[in-house]
Image (tube, rainbow, N blue to C red):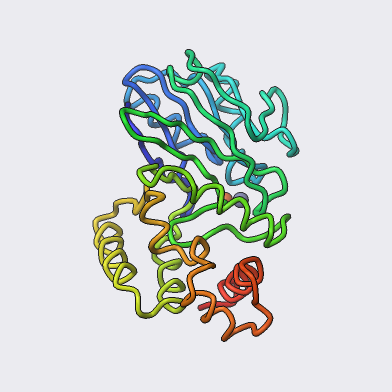
Length: 260
Ligand code: ZN
Ligand code: FE
């Protein structure tokens, strides 16, 4: 199975899984790069997985479905045009033609949007894969457009508890700017310096920094580290009210929104 990040717009990725014949894509905000990849590799599109309702994630769905007959899966509680198989946390996609023989588990991850879901597969050629949309980014998290800090913390905790070897497929290439913020939060972190150098080299070579992994994110992502004393202390320096883990996450998110 191939796992490919198709660049779209300025900094989106449409993730594609394919076995050389059939493909599935996640969050095709733009149909163009998907059509191009299907044609170039001679693939048939079987399904489209959607994580949330934002235009940069669903903009290409209708054109792809009409041209290929692919089945569309998406969140139960968001406004997304039909036809759509509506999913929520705990639902499973059974292995079958639409899933390229893979089994996916749906996880509710509200925060960025109210009905945001993620897709986790325990075994893609021996290791797990997570499609998390705009909830978890490498070294960062999505903005809280429709949810509360408490919801986002619960969603991130849920993702952080997945096996460390899980490949994390985020929908945006935000890693370097997230890492700049992460270094401001934890200036003493050797992991951050090492990972930043790695990501700078990848971007210089025009390669994605993704997928990341859950194990790596637990070491470098301040939003998964709100219970670390150094992170909590940094949050309290910008917001004295940041007492518990939810308060720390809220303070970090606010600080990041204003961070240059
Ligand atoms: Zn979004
Ligand atoms: Fe997005």
